[in-house]
Each structure stands twice: as structure tokens, then as C-alpha cells.
Length: 436
Ligand code: AMP
Ligand code: GLY
Image (cartoon, rainbow, N blue to C red):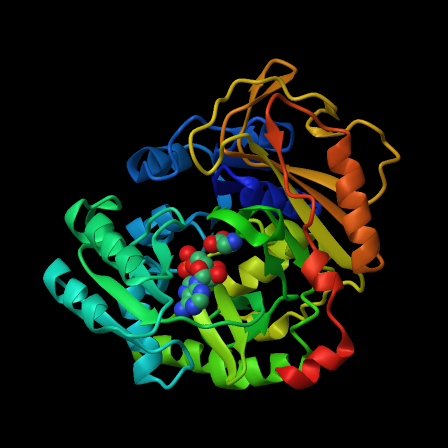
């Protein structure tokens, strides 16, 4: 069977490498893919959002199954279109993808269906938002642009001045374009963060192994927010008891709420959670696999991925026993110096062979490419996040050690990566459970 994967980041590379484990898969096309993905799939030079060209491509390439990775083609209705051409496609419809593409929709959904989240207000004009900021006594507060903003639309304002500046940036200067037409201002929550990705066909919901993202650019969670500088799985703060509670209070109610709204969600639903002293609360929903969460979650998946994705599309997820391996995974992202601000690209990447670790004995290490370009047999940097090095081991300590050993073999000009991915997770003690 030929498979089409839309997207070209580390998440899609992890999906492709996992799909390849299925012996019925002949050829995988990636649109657009990237330099490293080109060793595992045939990359087609089209934008992931150019749905007309993508449809034309599928006409003569006998695609038996498709997976849509990123949020923007999902929000544009890529899945609806491919399904309408008879191609079984994994991902939510446009109507269901709104759970990520509109924060106002997501917050109102949670409020209507009693799903725990930060208290909030919605503002349609800069004037009313500034008035609210002026009247707010306790800081920090959190400001969120309504629409997609490349993960940069959330501002945690420590002071009134910062909050007012954020309103001006979003609603008057419109730095996120239309995404700033409406904004959410919400309560600041604190506690350990957990990412849980779940397969759902709108009838059954199966959470995957939990993970922890590291969003800030620098060690000790300092510096600006990024798309994610590294991940570990499983997340030790997410105990079995917490998992049961989240299933009852958050995951199943969200699936039911989307059905009730006439927007059944079929695909991977991402729950960004904060474990506060009052219990788990939703920070955000994403309508897709997380990046770089996928790079630690899928390596631990024991069940065939294609079988699960097909069952989601045919609404038969209940019939597939989904299992994860024991052990742990850690992904460290190598970024271009300067990211998430300005950075240079085009630097040769040293230390890889066909995109993977050179040493065939580098046991338990995989490299997932995000921003790389291939020129014959040379790989060059081509983005802010360049690659993610994932180590898998019997426990978190060994997974972290393998990831760092793997990344130490790789080099390019101005390489930047955090040295403390997983450190907070290692500090977790069983006694922490009682505090949550
Ligand atoms: P998002 O882009 O929605 O993933 O948000 C980025 C990050 O902002 C999250 O991972 C949290 O660390 C933080 N954040 C978002 N909402 C809140 C909140 N209400 N309280 C505290 N931190 C938040
Ligand atoms: N790692 C967060 C996200 O995928 O949005």
C-alpha cells in the first residue's frame, strides 16, 4: 500500500518511521517532508497547505491511506477533502479541528461541559481588553490570541504594563494577523505540566503514554517560549491515579462534548494539562500529534501504528488493543543558534549517515529531522528546530543518557540544545504524589 503523510517536521518523521515498521507499507510519500525524511519516504515539493495540488497529486499515485500531521492543513479541511475523494485519512475534520484553531471555542466548550480549565474572559476589542487589564489586581495573567500563532500566541504577563503591551501587540499591531481578532485573558495556573496524546474515533478514546515538553529556549526553563526544545515519556508526575481522574474528568467529557456539538473528533487529540493543587486542568487542546511529544511517544508504542490509525478512520478503535512498551524515551532538540528569534540556515550537519546515527551500534538512538535539507548526500540546516535526537532505554535515566550521547555525535555551526531535558522529571519523588 502507498501512504501519504502531509507535513515536514520531526513529528511527521517519527510517524513515517513508525509506519514503515508495517510490512504491508510499500511506499510513503511526504508532502513536503524534509532532508532527513527523504531517506525514509519520497518527498514531494508542495506546501502542506496547498490542498488543490495535493489532491491533484493523489489522483495518480494510488494512495491507500493518508495522515495529516500539522494544524494548518487540518484547520483548512485537508481531511474532509481527502475523504471526499475516497482516501481513508487520519485526522480530524475541519469542524473538529476548531478545538485547536480557536481558543475561544475551546474555552467555551470547557465551560459549557464543566471540563476543568483556568477561568477566563473573551475580548473582541482592544479597548475592552485594556479596560480589563486596568481593573485586574493580581498578576500574572495569561493572554491568548484566539487563532493559530505558531505556538507563540500565549503571553504570560507578570505586570499590568506587560499585559497592556500584549493587548496592543495582538489587537492593534496585529502581530498574529487575524488570530488576534479576539483574545482570551485567563487565570494563571501553576503546577507540573503533562502532555497526553489520545487516539479517538469519537466512540472510544485511548490515551497514549504521557509526556513532558520543555518549551523554553534555555536551561532551567529560562528564555522565550519555543515550539518545544525536548520531551520525555512517560511523565512521572502523571500517576495512575491522575490518569484515571483525567480520563473521567477531562478526556471522555471532551470526546462527548465534541459529539454533542456535532463535531465528532476522529484523530489524535492532544491534552495539554496542568496538575494544579485543585486538580488537573486543561491548558490547551491540540487537534494533532504534539511536536516533539510524538518523538518520544511513538518509539514506545508496541502496537502497529497503521492498524490503530486505520481503526480510528473506520471508527473501530475499540477492537484494537493499544499497548506501550515498558521503559522510557527522551528527545533533545538541536536548534539553530538564535531560535526562536532570527537564525541562519544552510550549515552542513556533521555526524550522521543517511540521516541517522553513524555508529551502527548507537543502540536505542533515533534522529528525527525537523528543519533539514538534503543536497545529494549532504544534509544542511534549514529551520529553527533542526533535529530531535531520541534515546530509548529501560528507564528515564538511561533514555536521557542515550539521547545526550547521540546528540554529542552531531554538530553544525551555531548548534544550540538544552542540557537539562528530563532533569525536572528525574527530581520527581513518589512523595510528590500526595501534593497533587
Ligand atoms: P500554549 O501555546 O497554549 O501551549 O501555551 C504555551 C505555554 O504557556 C503552556 O505550555 C504553559 O506553560 C503556558 N500557559 C498557558 N496557559 C497558561 C495558564 N493559564 N497558566 C499558566 N501557564 C499557562
Ligand atoms: N509541543 C506542543 C505542541 O505540539 O503544540
